[in-house]
Length: 392
Image 1 (cartoon, one colour):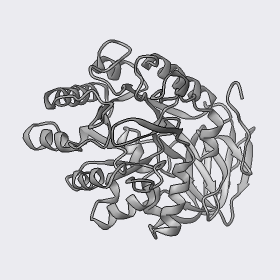
Image 2 (cartoon, rainbow, N blue to C red):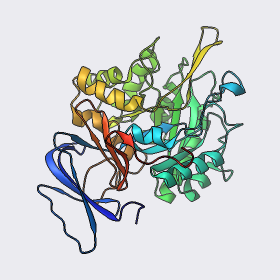
Image 3 (cartoon, one colour):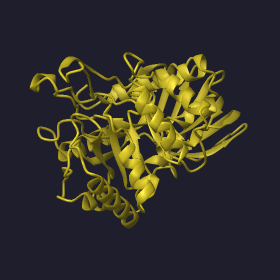
Image 4 (cartoon, rainbow, N blue to C red):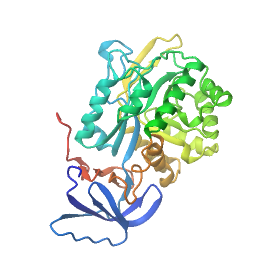
């Protein structure tokens, strides 16, 4: 049984988005799972401690799933002093996020997958759900076992592999190398019952997604094996990402890109994708939190560097609904059920439904977080973190 789950909880009268609109209903939480969703739920169990939570006038949504977080930090493009810090547990929970996928960035030398795994286990112990990607920017991929296939097959948290494509910091892989990596990920996923995908950091290189499109067109690797992220980095990349999505691929929009320069703000990118005919099922959104935000001039020289924050996903969720007229149930898919499915956790994450993990967030009409529950345990109550990380 999950820690904190011995108390049975009934959340009453919330307006539930599962992410589909369920309407006003109650939710029964027991053993870290959602045990029932319905009207006027009452429960009586001998010897049980039952907590009733009144959520009248509030929205209940699934815990947000951030599929791109530099949990051990990232960066380093301006030297060792520019290495970004590890993420804190309370920063994750305060943003309404209950599941993260940790990954490495530019630096696959001073940082490694072993550290990534250890940090993911620490965050899981503290109270959220975690997965990781093996690899980093480079090729061949850095791993724990010495083999991408074996990392995916034998390390519980590894659900895919990361690589950088079409970026001046990328390893400039060939079509054959990327095809082989995708094929290895596919076979490893099949053998281990995982998604087994290639998560591609997309830069603003001239080739964009051309190589991936060629692999799909000329070969036998299914489009579902490729997961391009940062697709709103530039208008040129975004246009090719829309075509990729219309072919059936899933694109990942980065919520920390605010529309400066040639980037497209995440909420606007989501609206443009929907208006262009992309299926709502083929869009996810992630924060790139604790990764660096470097800016280069036209000669490739570093001009400035910052750090991405994790709350941007919740901010962009609100902006999609409030300022771009995207229905709540559609916008929520991008940060709940779609990423759950993309990482192979769609059977237990991303929905308010019987048998799913009790990852529940209560928000007001402006998506301000009031309560966060992860696997039945309260992490945030009345807008304040009631559980902190080990050293917080």
